[in-house]
Image (cartoon, rainbow, N blue to C red):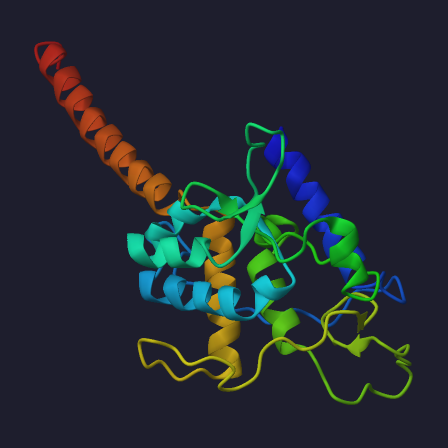
Length: 255
């Protein structure tokens, strides 16, 4: 139930963070992208997940939160314990009151959930023109075709809006966003980050990588779930074959 509620809140937050679309009609048809985790045998690409975290850390986390992901979980995308400690300690959160009842801040720990860039939601909205940046923990599950929507949103900015699409001051034209007027400025561009693995950081690559990381954030158990499903199907296949052989043995004399 908690996850369903959070999913609904994220969906609402996406609309709010975009500054309430200026029209009710939907955006352009989404870009359909193949994903490594698609299909029965699909799995996350660990190298892509680590690159996606780098994009989130260097770009997205300056405005957005990731409240449902603990720093220690980042070991699943390839970060070492030492790297996790460094990332966690970059921000501070209020500690428990000391013996005098005074609350002071302490650096983040591996056991903490990812610490947001602002002390509270009002501060976050004030720093972003009144639009609260949504938490990204479940953003890929907030709507049908979530990964394609996020990818398309990253790729959908245009410098000049087409005729007939007036964009209010302080907003940006995005052909995939419902209403086309979005408060979030363009987030990705070529060579925005330098990937540690040497991958060329094109706009398309950055968008694909952050989508993969955000899908992992929403479904970190996907690989294990699919692996278990395959084992179950294999077990059921063997069990069916055994029952069939037993049936033939029992009814052999009848035939």
